[in-house]
Image (cartoon, rainbow, N blue to C red; front, side, top):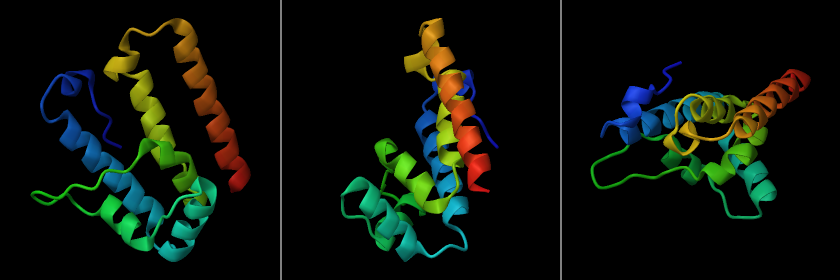
Length: 128
């Protein structure tokens, strides 16, 4: 796994690296699975239209002038629909290790995120 370092957070390439990693994780999560079923499960969870084409857009490499970004708020539904929680794990790890919004947060916030990551690991183990 290619975590984004705190040095990368200050550079102009951070967004590109982050988007590339999100796309990679999502592509691995849907690989070999029925994309119609994933989209249907997400649609039920989110109460919003989600299509197989949207999933393809989220994982496809960005092309000049066309970037489709995955809404972070959809991550729990995506993970539940795929049975793969790596996307949420990755976001939590990044939050704990240097996202600017969390860099100066209080200890309680870090502990809450760690607790969430532990609970997520438990849920993942229960799903297996």
